[in-house]
Image (tube, rainbow, N blue to C red; front, side, top):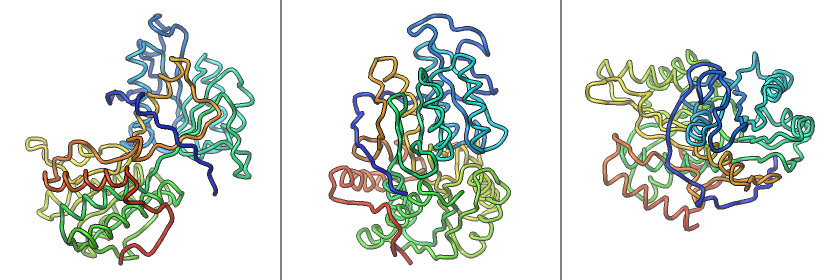
Length: 372
């Protein structure tokens, strides 16, 4: 799949991050399904249709929703999400139509599975605005057609994975790593390839010795089978793996649960989270705030959702464009606070991040023979 990327620096639009997760499938910022109370943007309603998984998946859906909720609270907007019965084009179109009919004409959709749905919706609902994250509209032929009422968003997952790989290697120094992916799609693959490059870079340049064997790279095939995630993690840990990078949504939550069980039994195993800061998901001791999540390879999904809403309110909606968020515009990274990383590790990762931003280090977004 060839994607034409248009880089756009949106540094001026980045604000502070604020997590505010909704709890039911009606998320009106002004109280359930109540009417808009006026404020800065009377009548402006923001909707979201979830992808595979749930609104509290601790990953992609939740990160998107938190950005919407931040904007809804800050600008006094109505917001709502709908979860389709399945993940077919028809099911996505049904919920997009339901949002539109309810007056939600700014609609955010997270995931490549929405590509053909948004291709149809952007023509069918010409007075609506659409944000498609991790995909571009097409009619099945993968030729991008981004109308003026649509923005297509991509992230440099390979750069985020690279940073997480460097942090993992520098902190642990030696051991065996594993990778559990959800579906074998470009965004997940790039996390894997970037992580492998980060480990290899640290081994070659920073004196570490972390291995990653082919049998410890697995794609489960879904994003919601947490039981399978736990089983895959258990198999890897039993083979001697001591840290697993999970880019798998709910599947990764299962792996985190397995890691917590083992740590509570006296083993020393770790998880690297994905998309958002998953530290709290890995907490196994509330009193000490101890977590099995070493760090997380983050995409600033919440910030991007917020920024696109703000751009519309400011009259600067970048319709018709395909945007890429990467290290250069601070669209990817690892958490600013990493309780399980030493100060020395954080400094080392910050140096590597600066080199990626400057172009001194170039992370490949294709598969290669990175590490054995």
